[in-house]
Length: 223
Image (cartoon, rainbow, N blue to C red; front, side, top):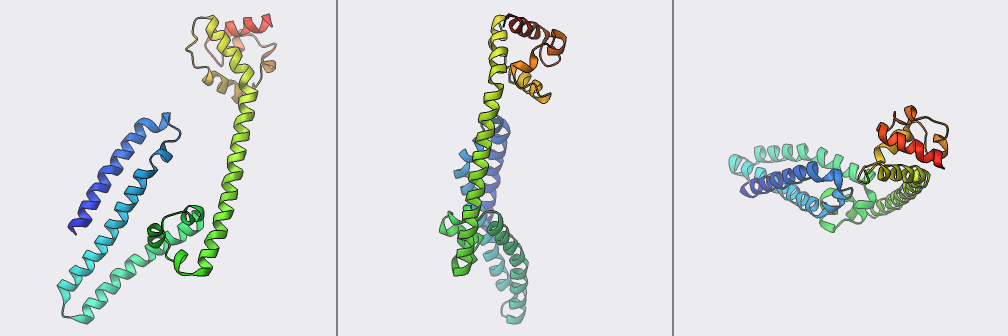
């Protein structure tokens, strides 16, 4: 139990540290989760070790408490096992269903703990492999779709971004972040400079500071 308590303390310490750091840095680092993968694996190992030590400690405590009353000892140990089995079964089902690709490429010790059926049954291994291939296709399609959407958005908003940055430089605010104003315009479907033709300063000022709107209007009139 001392080993289980030590693993529990270390898990709480490192998990709390990761949580605090994520609050501070994840907003400015889009790859934060991926960057923390090694620490997450370590926490997973601590959790697995803790669960194993707790189970082992409970069995030893039961034997010490009820020995030599064999029937009572067996009944209590069986009850402990029955309590753990449903949780482990649900975790195995979740991993097999939602994370087949990750399970397929996981190390052997992780497969053995999270999904023993993926190792000991040939049909289960084949089923995991088929689901992993399907998940890989879904992730690939999603990646291509997101990349295409990003490229299209950047292309469409490029002219507006150039116009706003030029206007910001003209008023001496080259450090101004114009992405917020681009998003405001995009919300009302103003996704190209041509869409702003004919609009006055008052309308533009609804989406950006008035001084910037006046400069944007002037640049549009100049062509």
